[in-house]
Length: 406
Image 1 (spheres, rainbow, N blue to C red):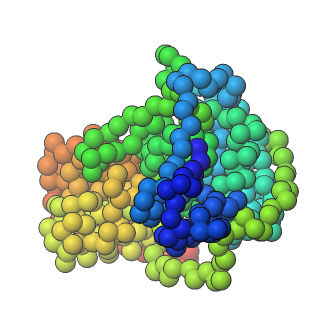
Image 2: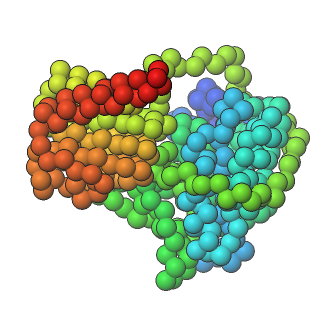
């Protein structure tokens, strides 16, 4: 694929020059010419008033790619401030299961600097190999550099599956990477499996139509099969106490490939921890009744050292902030304890809490779907049940305090 400029049609009007933010076009002798900086973004195509610029697509015959050359499952590891994101470990857990079904290796690819301790720790979670791309430049995330390095690496090693966390960074470079590799990408997956009956295809499940439908997507004719996965969809596996083979690559990075400059980084103020990292979550739904009545849930969460959250309905009614929404269109979580208060348990919500260790449901409706997946269920009015729970927790805390004092 590439950009083609019809010199006979080009008028030298410079519309394409003004549209290109990458310096991919210059005007020579009153005609537009491409430079090596062109990223094939297509901005010039839309800007040209006379239709002199077009994108030439490569014609690839179905079945032309020899997919038998592709083997292995890859996890692309993300780091910030020299610490691996928790989603990396979640992907390793699911990636290990997929690799075992395919009887192949699991590889984690990590780009960064000063990650030796992280790499050693990651090696004990079930990966067979870790490819550590090490450079001081890679301490920070740069779209262009990450895409170039990963594309070259994947073309060389030919993994059949590449999994990426659906984080802001992952969502940024994954589409670019899939385009360079001329393969498909399924974004924001909530489930992954292998279709073993046919061609060992990756089954990539994600919500669509506003979460009302679950779609399973396959990539039969392109490789690698790529997917981004929402944080919290899979649990972090237990350590296997076996070490992976670690390969360190120190690339020669061309500074000219970096089109952006990071001037400073201002961390967002976080008054509450990420729901994805919370051990205890108390969530409310329509059954809470009103925004004011969420205060009793806040009190319960405080006693349990937990976080407050809500269903999609609670968010739409304005009872709780959208950042606190749990479910397919919100956040997927995996706490040790999840309390669903006044939540009926629509499939969209249940998918977002399926990795919780223990689910306790409180609902007046004994037929509420939430009870189908709850480990413990209480049929009753949450405004009568929760005050009893709070008093019991306080009583137990007081007893523990007396024991320590005696």
